[in-house]
Length: 160
Image (cartoon, rainbow, N blue to C red):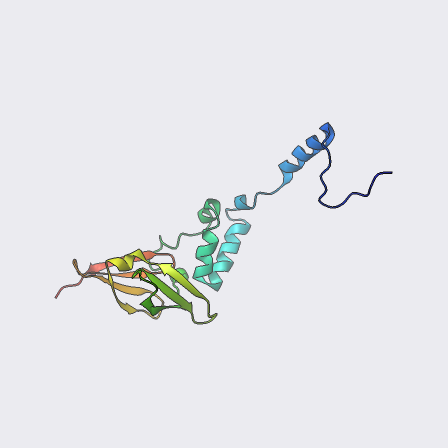
């Protein structure tokens, strides 16, 4: 009498079982490849309606998911990608002047962001939309930075 089969127990392969296994691989789904106008694009839109930080995380999953969702860096000041719920806390974290903490005013979520743009720019103001108004003092170039997707916009130079 043979012992009952346990879930997860390995079984010896036969020619028939390995052939059946290879056929079953043909019908399995690769979740990274469900992009296009299909479910991944719809999920990206739904994630974006919730929060731009979640959208950035969604796009970070894999290259194929990035391809099926609009790039928040390419849109300039596209209103869909503005971090309206997020504020930057005043002080830099640790010894790095580039590392700042952001707080979601609705959920209380806190994230740390490395903002290399702040190494050579001075933050003049925070806009109600969550953008940072930056000044590059040597050239007097002013720009807006969307901090979550690191999307800069360039403005005309400021004159004295």
